[in-house]
Length: 137
Image (tube, rainbow, N blue to C red; front, side):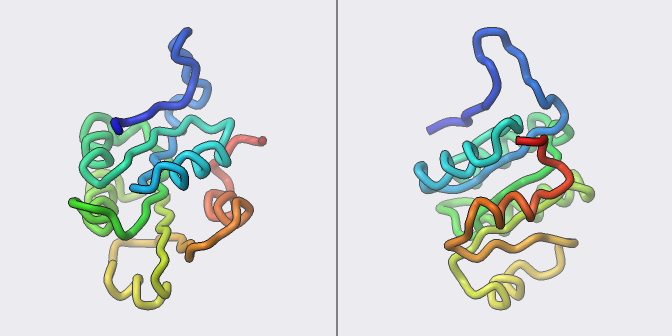
């Protein structure tokens, strides 16, 4: 699956231009649920690390946050997060993991502040991790 963009494809409108959230997860159903839970925010979905890097390289400035699974096939979530922080040090980063958060934090190392969501998590947990940047639902 390629990158999927929210917003109105017919009109080309992007209601939250400059406030886009990049959601990266290799499980399509989880990725789509996360994207829907973030509505009405503008969301770009990436099904793996390579797609996420492509989106970041194309226009890192459009993103206000990245919600990324740590375990991805191919290019790892760790590499995506490090790259995102290299090009946008101010980017809000939310890391999803099925691992123990302390173990995952050791793996990720020092990449600046991140919010951690241990799977399974609730939509309320996700929205709290992105507090201040999500539009009112």
